[in-house]
Length: 192
Ligand code: GAR
Image (tube, rainbow, N blue to C red; front, side, top):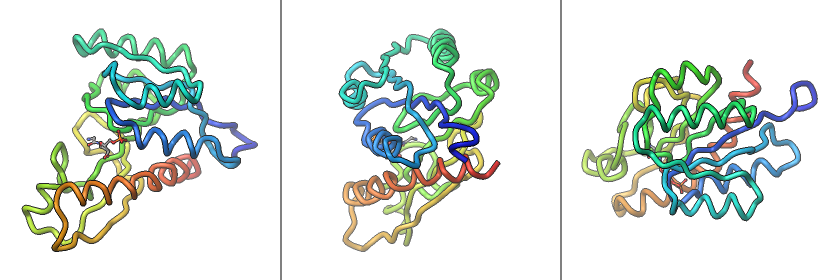
């Protein structure tokens, strides 16, 4: 696969901590990686992930989000210039428009901290606990114009313990996210 098609140029969009970005960078450095991270974009100038990208000598850019149209136009320009084949949203907290998705016309993945279709949006862990769910988990899915609703590529489930708080659950789910995202990328790229 890798020999036939080469590594896919990947852009990672972040808004904050960037622990999923870290796991993607780690994966991209493995021998069998199917991706090369060529661009990291953040809508938050103070995102910790930007520093990590810089440390790893990956082109990293902050784009101020003043309005969606100008933000997305700048994104499209950068994606084209860097010949990006796939976008991975990793804790990116802005919603991309249907028009952007159409114009990019290549896969956009997102990782979400719940077992979609349950608990779209924010505050997933507290809501799962309040509703006395037995399980939580993480989902990697294709991004479409509806929030957290595109085709599911891969999901991983974990048990919610009676002793779990929103915070402890968030920690556990984040840990499984780090393993899940690279696996989902492999699944996507080997399923053509
Ligand atoms: C992750 O838990 C990710 O699933 C979530 O934000 C966190 C980012 O952490 N994303 C969403 O909630 C998107 N709807 P990170 O910055 O350490 O990767």
